[in-house]
Length: 315
Image (cartoon, rainbow, N blue to C red; front, side, top):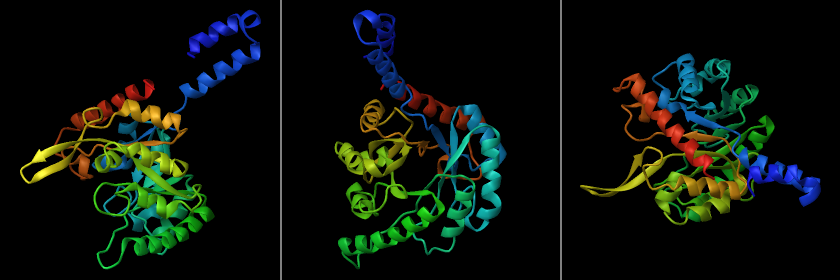
């Protein structure tokens, strides 16, 4: 039932249906209307050619709700400088009225050199979520035995996350690493507390590895999904065979209208991070210098953002 129909019912509540039913109808529609209320964040990898202040201003002017900061080697914030630089970056973002709730890291173990320093600093700044780094498979051991070891590794991270009140998420990523097939992510995290460890679900990578089965992976992992990555792609025939080629939002294989309807149906309400991995003069690769005009890069990113909002509103 549409919102306007609910309003009509309110006007005729004493005649057509009980007043409380009409109120419930309107409230339900308000919830659905505001389903995705945690915002779309720009991945700061694409703005690493700008300093913190200019990055924040650019994100604001484009219309983003927040920034997902790269806190990793070659990132916007280097791990060794996290205590000094992350507060500066977060302050710049929040000063322009944007959210600074997410960071993307290379963390894979609680025992890594900078892990606790990054998590502690982020938590103290009120950051709620971080994306983890990549786990690799080795040919020297069986996949089940490696997953068993990685599960113990993530268990230690879960305990650290809980102590600092922050959520860590592993992103599914196409290729041949852990998480290329989303089922191995489920095996790793199914017995861990989703409050502290989960999956950063990436529909582009899920579709690249399973064009028609991505919904199964989404449904499997839904209880552990607190953050979402968005990007688009096509399958392209190259001289050396078929490859996955990144595309602007709405120009590729991802059916975003169906995607937003699906996550709404599954009651997944999480912050989104927009990625632009197609050619952007180096901005797509996190370069400190770009070969395209500033206005071209920002206009292109805004076009992706506007396309996403259009799809979201169709749900």
